[in-house]
Length: 554
Image: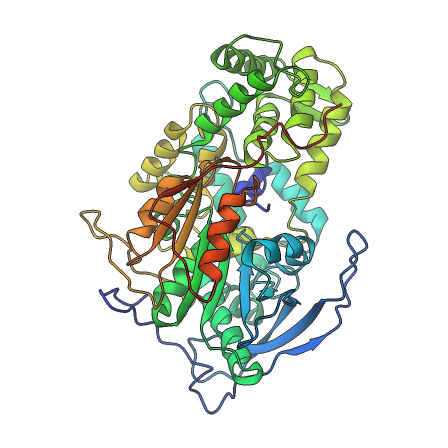
């Protein structure tokens, strides 16, 4: 599944309002498609899809659509529009009642959504009961929807991001002034983005990429389905990773229109909007996740895990792998045109805890190769192929969306909140904190102020939630060993939304699709049913397969 921090390369590491009252949250001022007679509700034009899907031919029940929406919902004087590109997988077991659609966002910020839905629609139909049409659109800034760029071509971007490297903040892993270099690199990147988008037309588009705008796009789709296809005019939604942040935002803006809302792999919205980095809490369970995988490795033995015969305890195996990281940090080697150093090794280790199903068995073989210093070309090929699959292409959407969403800006490299957030994140993970804490500087001096962004706090100064009452309760889902969106964030955000429930999965990986679970599917089907069966709060679901039960193992 697409990740909230999708890449570890250079500056791409970023790899998630009105006052809130007890009854409702009024949205920011914006032009409403539903009530503005000057802009009638547009109809979605559905037709066969015409993009290349040679990797997975589209089934007959999938089609594509386009919907015209306002470019800027906050400008009542503008007639400029944007065309959203949608994909629909039709219900496999349509209900006899009113037609229903469920909208999806699979993460980012900065990832497309249509091709992901096309690839995993059968799984999603099974998990949701099959009665819904499943719908996704490529959000602003992604794919071909207002593509946000800071460079004229991919070559310029590659050259720049090779130079503007985010440094590992672990002692001894990089230069002693790594934090200052990260800050300078981030500012340089922001300057490049600013210069590339000086044209008024480009700048206007760069300012309307915020999550608040995408939330309004979600409701524009709902309005169109209601006006032209007879649906209920309420939001049925499943958001994963950054998609959970989008769901939190749309629920705060339109609480009385939330019919079914599943927020999965949950981002803490307070951290996302009001602190530096993506979510300073994102690494809270990365170390336990890593140690849990090692423990399972020893349990399944060498027949499924290539590391199982190295040590007798998970703690000893962890020490062995950390010694390997240090060895490559002190003595890097070159293989297949790439330098294998401590950072490279840690990035490979992250794969094993973030994407466990079908990944871990093969990954342990490659980690064993690193330990023995053999077959390094195969290790590099695996690494390159994996991270290439997460590439966002010729755009800079991650920074364009996440940084424009930020309410905070730094006053310089000695900004106290920036320093505190960086150190907090570094200290939350002994294993990976130094590697990822550098992303806190990314948006420090971002030059664009996003329009329509959510600006109010979610908790007061005493840490108490500002409660929102949605039309129907929200369902939060978190994996106990999710390395980038801990269950703690799901519990924290559930306190915001009155009557919401938290489903905790005794699972590894990022998001509920990371490890199959009949228990999870049962909860989701009950929640999305017409009766809306809610689980008890903080119910725990076991998973059906361990991390070494699936996947290729030589």
